[in-house]
Length: 187
Image (tube, rainbow, N blue to C red):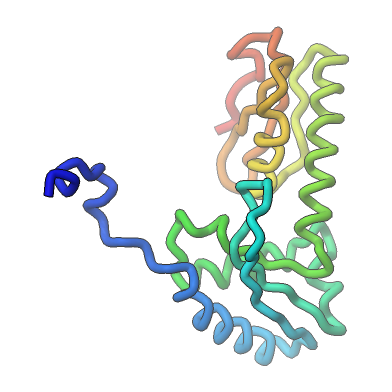
């Protein structure tokens, strides 16, 4: 009984819903959106079973295919991102599970992750060459996290997210500049 008293404060809140319990509501909502939107899309939901080296990998992937699938990945996946956001919010996915489910099409997420990792290294090198902070293009929260993680082992640069909402940007800063060298926080 002594172990019950030693539980952390986070145990006071109700237990999180199981990831699988979101599967049916996600499927139902996607079917409605696809049908009412007139999209020629189909999707499969698959659970990643093999433990990947990447701890940030999702556990549940919703893969889209069909004649309209190219629409999802145009403009850096804007429609795919929007669909994912709307559906996960609409099914009231608990915040701590948000990174555990992802929507994908034509391996866009994997390719984008590799692109972001490469971009992070190139941008870090540019920041070091110029000796100045290097702001990146606008990225989603998930994409900013990928860049943060891609550069976390480098001691010669640090990353910082600045601003709020749609204007939030990631800045790569040479470590030699110190902590307050990224310019004013654009909050």
